[in-house]
Image 1 (cartoon, rainbow, N blue to C red):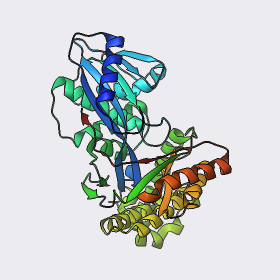
Image 2 (image 1 turned 30 degrees about the horizontal axis):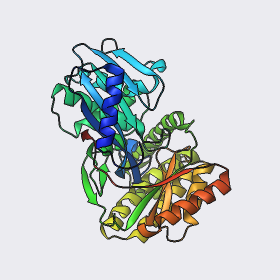
Image 3 (image 1 turned 30 degrees about the vertical axis):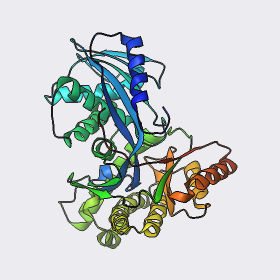
Length: 396
């Protein structure tokens, strides 16, 4: 698939592939779930903090048919290997690769008492793998929608990301927050979501300048080799900082770094070891940046929003230490172009992608110039493209 929105041609091609793989006999159902770009609020979700993501027009789609047994037969057109598994005795299996993500969702849903079924499924996506746009969350949310659709089960839409996060935490073993699954499930065209990951309160924030401001993605093409292990390490470091700050402040009710505001942190941050001070500094001040970004977005103030993106990237680079040379260079490449409001890495880091906010009339020039500059700085042919703000997952 190309980067455009899914259409009738995509559905027809998926149907043909499904029949080639599994044959005919039952009506085929079609589902989709989008990737995401996080405008600001990085590594705050698992700290019960604030995030401001958008769903984008890069997606995973699926053609699925319910089976009468408890078997899954799955193929992705993005990977060479097919995956077969039974719901009975299901556990993480390294040899099943990408298939662990949808299988984990099936297991978690059944444990939660939600009706599940076996299925034949073909997946196809145009989300760059390892690009930091959360293809893993998209396929998790997609699988939840498939199982709900095939069984005719209805649950609160807000429950879907909770189940998918649980699958990634417990089945896959990555201690992610809930942002990626939440925006894939509940995104809305031309809106960002402001989500409080501690309370799960959220609201859609209109991106009123969507026709005048383009979101450009720059993929470093660097695989995120350290992302999972470093992610879990950052979770542990933040938990250590919480323990020390709880004692220092004498507040037993502190459960996360997001329970501490910037002013309070300033008064006691020197009590922390240097490494933990840096981690806490990023999270606490990133939460403040998200609030400022919402005000800027509501006021159509792209200059302020762009400055906040740059501050966020600097903090992720220097305080949280999850950037890399290629991500820094791609941000530099964006900022070398006339008219760019701001740029920063998006996602877990250590590779993947960065984003830039750009006047729409300049997007083509920015894509061309930043690609050339990134190649000059790194020798790598990155992938640069504009994306639009899409709806969340559902049946096609």
